[in-house]
Image 1: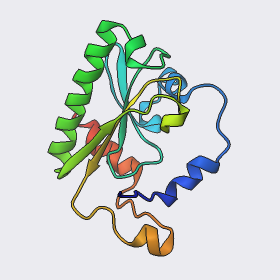
Image 2 (image 1 turned 135 degrees about the vertical axis):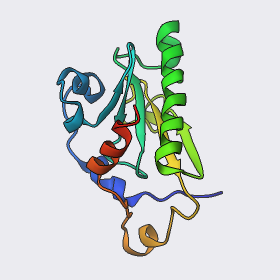
Image 3 (image 1 turned 30 degrees about the horizontal axis):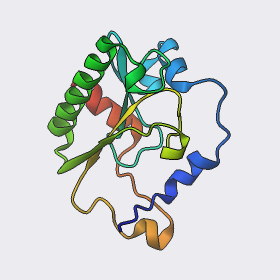
Image 4 (image 1 turned 60 degrees about the horizontal axis):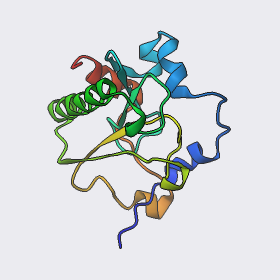
Length: 157
């Protein structure tokens, strides 16, 4: 069995969580650059993860507060997975990753930080992107600032 260590995520785990749902609230603020919203579709949008596993780690999520894909409308689901495909193409073009982790955690016991608002994680991966730093020094190196990642990706959507 392999273990994936992500000790830099402890900041997210231990932080006081804001009331409400950030996946509902952020698109209403109409400040896409500050909120790292990369793309807006009719039913879904893309937002960069503020606590990324790797540069380019993004979430595709419906605007509507819905807990799982089986609770989404057919139109929401179709657009959602079209946007996931578009996001993969954008990440390939901009960052040239060797692969991707793509998935969703449904429910708290499955690891969902936001259990009642469905979202799909897209995490670009590179050979050797997991190095000894997290093990030796309890540190994860994200080699690019979130604002710079946003700037690079925004131009492609």
